[in-house]
Length: 373
Ligand SMILES: [Zn+2]
Image (cartoon, rainbow, N blue to C red; front, side, top):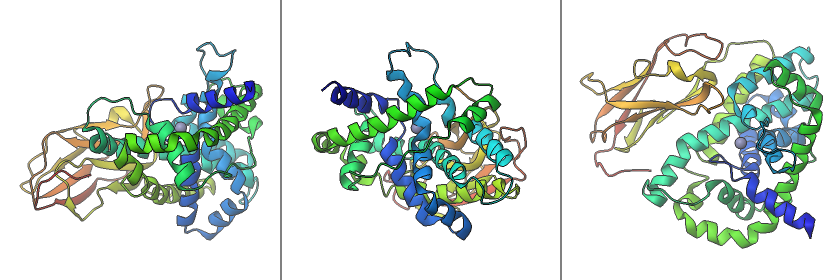
């Protein structure tokens, strides 16, 4: 009985962190991303080391699991720091240092790519999908609906993930080295405990999912029916993660040729854009939040007049870099109008390198000005 209570507590508490998708949601998004990978070598590595990939795709949340141990007492844990673009860079540097030749340490490479996917997926889900869900289900008003716990219940039941828990892989000595590159002191015991609790919580989620499913579905019907298909949802994120992996794969193989701008939404040339749409830029390497300003990320209308609006990034309070940046127009866009969105080289990545050029893309709003999703 004690174990069951512990499992349920862990399941509920773990996913209670503000925003972001939960572990089962990450594994599903990561598996979808695998289907979108074009590079045959990368695809075969990820398929052959699938358990390590899935373990990695849940890994960043294992730090939060430590919050539910008796010894924690509100102390720092490695959860938040494992969600930062700087973690991806440190992990990449570690893999490059210890795996000199392509194809070596494949489990470690798969775990690294899984953890990187998690970080990207959280930012896309929080920045692009959740604001839509808040608008559609709660009219942008305050609410007590817990998207994190809910997404887990929904995907476990909808996608029949009852048995989908991988053979767990946690490369603790490698991860200790990654943290030391970030000047963070994390012990093997913390990593192992965090991973054990994370796996336990996944089992716990499966126990409560049948009871919670309908309630979660009723609580936010738009969220429950669009998490797969809407922008920032699973399929959208899977395609971005696949492109992100291809850039990281190139970098692992000592090429830095990838374009720092991975994707934008709405896409270049998009039509029928809703009047209340936000403009998102997605980067393959963390960009520094202070360099994302109205002077470096902005939009103009067809008469070249600036569009009033605000910018934000998916940075956390623990770091200054983010993979997703957003421009939010202050007023509804005009119907049937074309806008150009710009990013300038004033934007710097986390190593201080500017964007190599100016980017511009165009989109056209729908003739009718009803708000969209
Ligand atoms: Zn997370």
